[in-house]
Image (cartoon, one colour):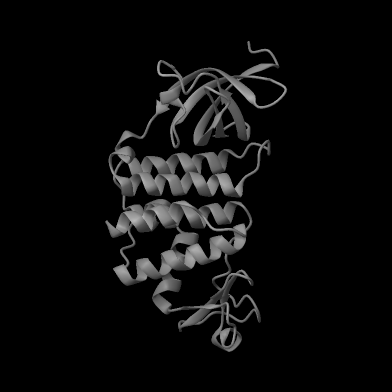
Length: 253
């Protein structure tokens, strides 16, 4: 039985950074304790046994010891490296985006949230097995916003509360959802949302993944919805994200 100063958790690596001469600080999202940081001692040494286990978007079983600062990693085993994701820049970039969102939206030492852990775990598995990347990412975004209290309003105007009809509307990040034409006109920060875009937004918000994956929007709708989600997420986070820029550069190659 583990002592209070040593415990085991299942985790997904969100990121790591160099620390000291040979160590790395690893940011983890754990099933049992939410987001935590831990030191992988010697992880930058050539013969380190830990280095390969603490790469971003790797699911691991890890033994941690309490310390005055970050936890210390005493043992680590890989449960799933999601190897197919690492074979292309596009998949690597999208997996990086998933873990970056989780990192930005969560805080160290929060209460455990197994639902968020499963969402990230399932989304990485879907990327790894070859599901439609765009569907996986948009579904993840909507579910993450939902679970964290930022669910966009899509069925009633976020300003006047009137029911949204089957016509072109606006979307306001500041007001947290769709605006009817009367409220949206003249709102400089609001973005136009056509009927097809709204249909897919609603579909992802209220459907299971099994139903959501049947969606097949055309390229224009995909591009517009991706842009809309970036606009909303940037507003909610109050800062830009790094991964989308990397994905844009990959797309231009």
